Image 1 (tube, rainbow, N blue to C red):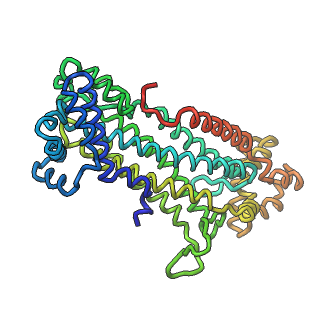
Image 2: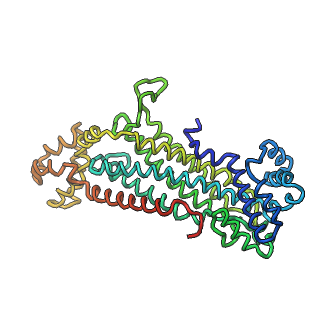
Image 3: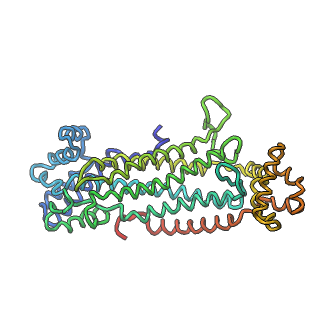
Length: 455
């Protein structure tokens, strides 16, 4: 069931092979910088470049080495020291601390995930843009507190979702140079083990990895990962709400939306005639899972002194899970939007059936111009209660109520109850925000795909 929780592309980013590959990249970059500056012998640096590669790792041997050491990075260093030989083996991990390697490797892994996330988000947002344009003029029943409220347009509802998703998509671009920063600083963050050329080593190593250069040690500053995860959680929250709204619109008694069911897709193992909104449920469920991971991210900033692994380890669990769950959620959302079907006939039927209720505010203002808004409010409240007590519809009560007809004519009453006359700026506000986002999307994506360097 893994594809219901994540995508294969994202899983390859957080697997053992890629993690080891990133650790090797970090070790090579640091050794190369030291070799160029004469900190370690050039021959040793060259040997490290050739040897410390994931393709040269025998996984079982590495696991055994780490198990014997009781410390994974120690086992990693010991494993490669033996393969580098007596001389070059002395210079791997030279001056580095475990956190330098693991944090920088995590940054590189997250940057891989970032590319996938942006790709998926862009695809999703393009689908949403199409929906906003397509349904810009489609009038639909609005809801408040689970009850029918006033009319709006489907395009406007979708534009509101698009607007929020677009903000978080933009935030991910803007935070990139801050998040994708090297973590080289030494055991307590003073750079002492790097020697007098510490700054030059860090700058060269970060340049080779295409990462921003840290201003200060950030071993105890976990906000880079927390801020990034927070944006993902906000994005996920919008998708969770979208999933809930589409789930409700799919209810049999509402029937305004239906998931895409192509030939062969089965809805139930027991009831052959139903088409449950499973993708909607996935969107809601994965948002719940992501929300449950965020407390671990927030707690990870509670680090004692200059280093400990108590809270640090939280991020090793929570950050991959958030990225994995989000990949599955965005994938489900994209399929839901692309292949789902809005039933315009049923939407129009629901509007017509509830037109009196959803237009009661408009009627109140029409009456209020004659008798005052508060009096009109009280009058319509009384009319509604009277209709319910007599088992009549609100419309039936209105067209026979003499007090109402003494204020407005039947013709004026019917004109006032037309939903198309009471959608405000929905069609105007929906379109410009969509077009503005689309322009930003194209411009930003063509000019700046992903750059880990400082702005």
